[in-house]
Image (cartoon, rainbow, N blue to C red; front, side, top):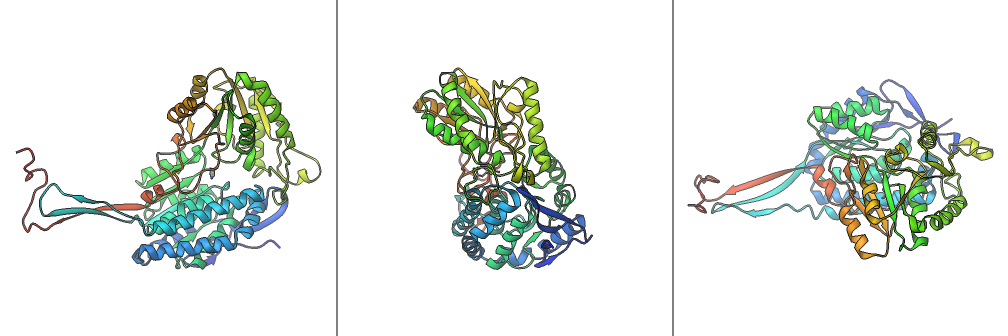
Length: 498
Ligand code: UN1
């Protein structure tokens, strides 16, 4: 019998009100059920919100450094359980152990960042335009935050959102991705063990169409933080916007790696293998376009294909595996459909393109790392986020052409250039329309203390990471204190222009 998991509402592990459930399976061994989870709906979200509202004051009244200490403890527990979390995450969503350890580490780093930030939530003190008057700012919690997260970084991304929201004094209604609910349960257990009081973090499992929508519509939820596809992000913005909620969106990418003729080729190939096929291409920061200069085109591709062939595809729990399965069957079908689209558009399927079958591969959803060459700017495989191990190679004749093609997409999350020319590097930093620019490094590998997010359809202007999300989860109050003992009128009683 598979283990039964629950929602976490008002400090209690409970099933869905409806009694409905769904299964969570291992994408490398589909017959393995990780657990049975509550298929919740609006009623469960309402209960969770009620608890979150009820416990707001108590949490907000705790001094910020006290909340910080709890998050520091959460980080310590995550350190102790890192291996256990990583193994569960690999079983649940497929990426290799090295990466699930990294995902967990990103959560740990974010916890310790929050611990430090607790003593650094400074406001502004300002002179006033009138005598005997002063002003400063304080930040108060928004109230309750709705957190909706994806399956590809089931620990790091919830931590990016939940830790800042908690440190700022908000209570939480949290919906995890239906493909990774077990990792989420682990996180909520750790938060509780670290000392987050009852009712402060409430977890509701279930589909976006019911649980997600209900979160967006709760009048008591003041801020939503969402990471996922641009299509769902649009829906989130629409519903939350109608209800005048603050929304922070982190959506897709179509990230280019430009390789110029003077680049260190070996380094650029290593970076590309990691950027394009790491996490089986299922990162919003994955490298999905190689903009390769014509002077090194054949030489580069020869080595790159050789190296791609050497990648070991398989169960992520086996330490020697380089690339795990894709998350589930519908996603595999979607990726394979893009392979057909690429062919029909006239791109050349240079390597891979197929589901891997036979023996152990029949048990899961494995796909060959795939390389398309002769890709033209504007083709669908060059424009749309595939979220799988599919790389489009576009030949460029100049630096300017590289930048132009790099920018000619609807997304702008990450970007990379390999060159040893300082002018090209500096110009790329200026001109690439992306929230992240890497020089001589792949498009993946953002660190938790620095801003993360992007241009255009990648989001709505917010950044995660570092101090930036703290602004999302706080209400700034500007305080004016007049000690002149009389009425002073701003803009009117000043004598500057008299
Ligand atoms: C994501 O793909 O959704 O920079 C997040 C990176 C990771 C985070 C990726 N640190 O690739």
